[in-house]
Image 1 (tube, rainbow, N blue to C red):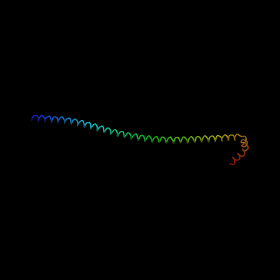
Image 2: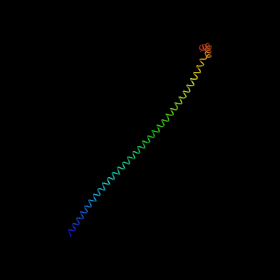
Image 3: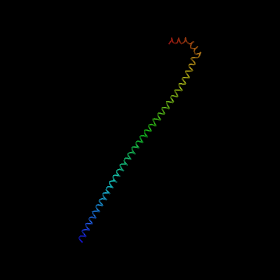
Image 4: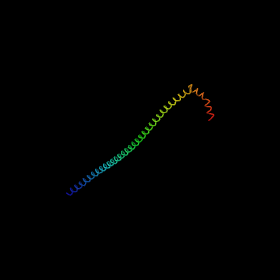
Length: 134
């Protein structure tokens, strides 16, 4: 009977040892899974932080682009207004030139008329006296 107890105790110790090794192996596997999960969690967190930073940069870039677009639109509006003012000034210049050409043509007709030439010839002595007296 003693041998039975000794054998059963040895079997129990062997079973417990075997079970302990199985549990240690499962624990090690579980710890490795936990490490992988923690690593995955950290990578996911880093990825989400990176994506948030990129979104911030995109928003800033979009804001800068919108500001540049607004500035360009303002510049274009000012440029178009300046072109309109120049076109109006050019049209006024053409109207003024046409009026002056009309006056010059009328004055040329007066100078070429017979009455102007006769009057000028008759007034020569008066012009000479004015020059002398001045």
